[in-house]
Image 1 (cartoon, rainbow, N blue to C red):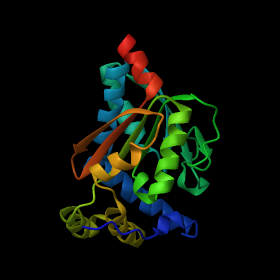
Image 2: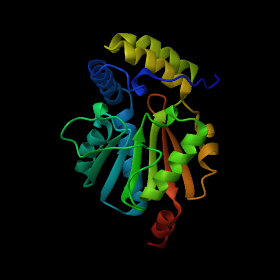
Image 3: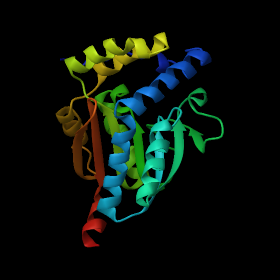
Length: 231
């Protein structure tokens, strides 16, 4: 299945606010039921195990309503892990009022070097073409102290079939159109590894598969992994 890059409605900035809200609520349900939250929870926990940290400051990029990292953080409290989250999105209309949030471009993060332990994103990297994906990785490693954590879809014909079958669960026409586009735009794990491995700041890359056609990626920052091994 070849990658097909087609713009998504929710990215356009021209989608009516009511449709934005409905579509983002659809995404919240999909992430709760079909592996979004559990994938990010697993990745955060892996960072804590590797680094020995029990508290992480996280910058969630392209956060939307931010339900994925927030639910993951809530579940990790039972394991003694504290996650402090800053939400970032390029559109104010995608962010919930009251969240600790920033409006900014993911490819030009407005933070000094090493501002957060982890930069994280969910269902974002498939929106990026290869050159922009590499730029995002470089920016994220600059801003992070430990790692970049990526939670995204795996491109696969069976996954596309499941999206069509799931139309009844989606209340928004935008969700249906963008859901199909997202799977077609998604990367396969080895494509992701090849693209990210060209980034010099990365010490190593871990890629794991999760339920349901989810890919978890941890891009370790060179200095962070060296420190963990020394400890």
